[in-house]
Length: 484
Image (cartoon, rainbow, N blue to C red):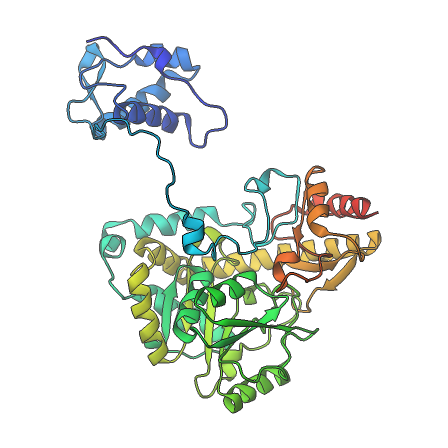
């Protein structure tokens, strides 16, 4: 059988992973695709190394790894061969191109794909001036300790947490950390049967809306507000009623007739307004008087570094009218997709059953890794590091905004990670964003945060969570130049 020629291998510039990993991937893909057959001889380690321009030890280690996985076999001086036991892809006849005979957009009504979203390019991190909200900064993240916690969660002692189906349950270690570490700093005392883990705050809000709303029911949403709330409410067949926020967040006087009120009292999205305790009390009194339920999204409370954050609305709730949603997306990283709901046992029991129909539970390994990260104190150290960095960036950005004469529409008094900005009348910030993108600057147009078609188009958001401190001034100057 003919040997596999070295020309079958090539390195692709920009591909993630080490050289050893890339060689392994080329071999496994060749075997699974049927290009490399059992018994075929691989190129010699010396020959492949010279062809790829890498060290011979890199190829040797890759081959040894493939032998341990039974993709290759070693025959001493004869070299390496594709194993007879290597995994093989099933052989099916090549399918003919298929036309889309059904108009699925018409069938579904397009009710999900037509939702307005905050626009940002996938390669946002390649831009020199990314004022993009919510993304993790690799220079601040605790890579080493997160890796150690993940490796610990992969160990034999945690094999059950790694591999078991929890069915409808959650990792007891992570629930314990939430009850003992996270919720008390928001003033919330809860029991195990009052907490449910979710795949991020988005999943938590969807579960809450699905349980509490339906056709004929009404939900108050903030305007401007988190775009996903409106789409979730409409997706479950309920009516989303936008209520304009003011400098203190959601007003209390326009909530009559609502079944559910969605609110971000501690850090309004996107204006950053913080609801005073007096208004929080009035909101709870209105809920009791009018009979509605409040869903509190406390998405960014950890980033309060200018002064102590106000107590969560849930902490003031004496009769179980507040459903509390939290997340680790802003404090750890968004790709973690780990959040939680806190509510009365009856609500959580229903939410747990609904979650089981969709996904059963978040991955056990992620839950256990997060539990160790919290329990060993790494989470609090990360939060302190982020607060210090965000405080410095906020100060520099505020000074640059003032110097360039830009207008802040909302900045909040507790911290956070962004400024809510207003451009002059007549400026469409979606067009402004495209103009700036060509100059290496990314901003977030504000159109998606407003309900209806006639909302203002001259608002935008500038975040400082991901942009390096030395680039803030120049980035703000480029925005001001584009506006001029």
